[in-house]
Length: 117
Image 1 (spheres, one colour):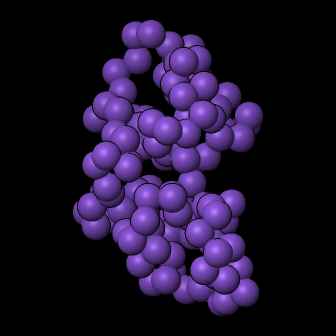
Image 2 (cartoon, rainbow, N blue to C red):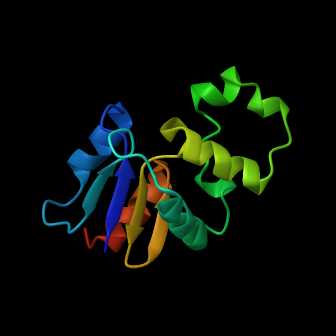
């Protein structure tokens, strides 16, 4: 199942969603309305290879909690990803068993190619 994990209130996510091909077969998962479960985090971890790869160091909470000054472990990244949706680097796409994390232009080109656009 192809999926996008996104935040409906995020302008960047909304802009990206508007650019997706209309005939995509993505299941949309708003991480604020429907927080990620441990099982979903584990699935993303298996595809990404680390929790840190899924973690957004741009999140306001990252700075507010002083996490940038700490040496975070994979267990820490997992804990924070489960605690608050803002720590997920978004959007995250799972397309044909491959994970695409974040909104960089290069990543979005890969997403479009994977979607056949």
